[in-house]
Length: 324
Image 1 (spheres, rainbow, N blue to C red):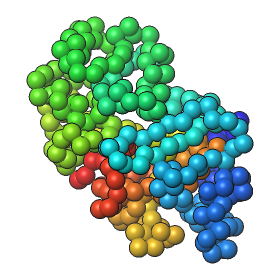
Image 2 (image 1 turned 90 degrees about the vertical axis):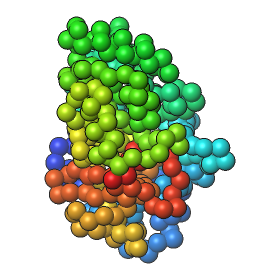
Image 3 (image 1 turned 90 degrees about the horizontal axis):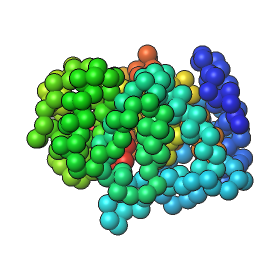
């Protein structure tokens, strides 16, 4: 395994590992190699990760983006509406994914064994191939609390579970897709200020899109919490970014968010300017670590970023699509 990916602790090391991974993937990932060959020769020898070309995320819909000769251990697929071509992420070594999400969750939230994890993710549970469900399954299994588990539309059971956990003083995480959390809040309120409420994903076509401030106000009022946490992840990535509130995401040390010029995809915009979101995910060692997403965002000098929308012609997919 490329274990030193998860030991990165400074900018210089991050840059060195990025260049190392790029040199491997430009040869071993056929799709990425073909894409690079269509660009100027100067892009084949970057000296810094900001000079590395990013593969348009649409290739995950039509091509097998793989940098390994090993057979697939699992193929994750994105959610989508009827008639939509969904993305697929062929994973040849699940150890990278497991190491990534376990270490990342620990860094942001501590040991999963100490947290009751409740998942309100009906649309993910009702289909196969979700990388989010794979992650949540693992975290629930790690939890030492018997109350941990999934909920579909049994909101009364979820309500009672939350009341019980509050009375016991148990540290609790409720992770839910946005529309399902809103569905729950229409009929139930819980005075649980210590609860961690984490939204992941958008409305999935189930509800009208809300601006982030309005959404978070509704959720804060329903659960009596001061902030709403968020998870930024997608089928094409094996790592996640987390927000403790206000839509500002922070990445683990082996992941980084950059913003490219929407009119010149090989150029980056300055910190604080709106651009299209590029993600470096070094856990994608066996696919492609340099992904040009369809999200519009701003990234900041302190390493955080916020998602502010989508390209007008982009399809709605299973990542965080909150518009502010």
